[in-house]
Amino acid sequence: MADKLEQYRGKRDPSKTPEPVPGEAPEPGGDDTFVIQEHHARSLHWDLRLERDGVLASWAIPKGLPEDPATNHLAVRTEDHPMEYLTFEGEIPRGEYGGGTMTVWDRGAYETEKWSDREVKVVLRGERAQGRYVLFQTRGKNWMIHRMDPPLRDPLPELVPMLPVRRAKPPRNAGEYAFEFAWGGRRTPALIEGGRTSVPLLRPLAGRFGSRTAVLDGEIVTLAGEEEVYIAYDLLYDDGRSLVAEPYRKRRVALEALEIAGARWQTAPAWPGAPEAVGRAAREQGLPGVVAKRLDSPYEHGESKAWIFVPTGA
Image (cartoon, rainbow, N blue to C red; front, side, top):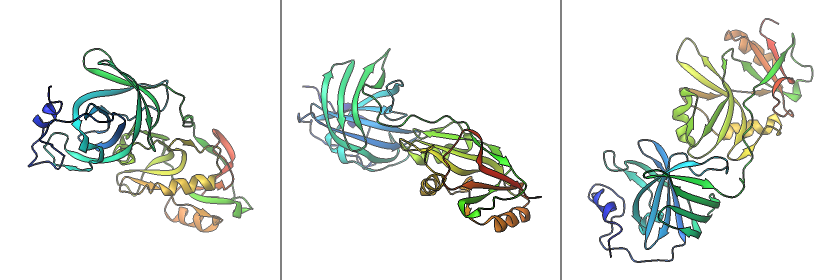
């Protein structure tokens, strides 16, 4: 019988990589265990591995598992991996095959509905990955992965910004609002999905999000004549759950939990019930004004009286 791990061993030097490189040919097992690893290699991707005939049949999925049956994702068939890879995490040295950081994203049991050379149907029963999927070969060596059952997550919201109304003075009931700086930047809602985003400035941040899907609202601003910085001040979607119907105070807590802080991206500061102090600070920094946001308001598309812009000259 051919050694299913011959190709795997040929690509790895056990003296240079911490990966398991067993010397013996694999023995058949239960064919009921899977692992998904998040792999920060030359490009971020996820590796799906299904136990089959004593090895882990493997596919690299650049965008992760599809959440919606309407969208298929590319799945690149790679060499079979040893069973020891079910628990492997570590740093593969740069310059070695697959160099980069690998962590276990999910692990669990699976059931096989069909397995052929061109099509694999399985039911995944992990903590994070659950559902019916089919992997199918297209032209050449390319494969795709398709979710067969309904999505378990909320649909993504429309990227239509909420806009403030203009007023000469802050609201009288200041305790019902949080006050933020009006930055005067370029409004830029941002979808982060599968470690990627269409906003170039945020691409390094998106990679750190891993498989987490999020929709941010914010602006790209130039602070003190330096480099552009993304200022995030709202969160519309987080890890499968739409937040647009949630009050601002809850969206704000979820946004702060993401800990968006770095040289090129920041979480906008907000101060409940402090219009005078925030307005004074905005004037001192030469900002165009202050935005008062009702603590109990949902995220509404277009102009809303729940957000009030007060210019610094008022």
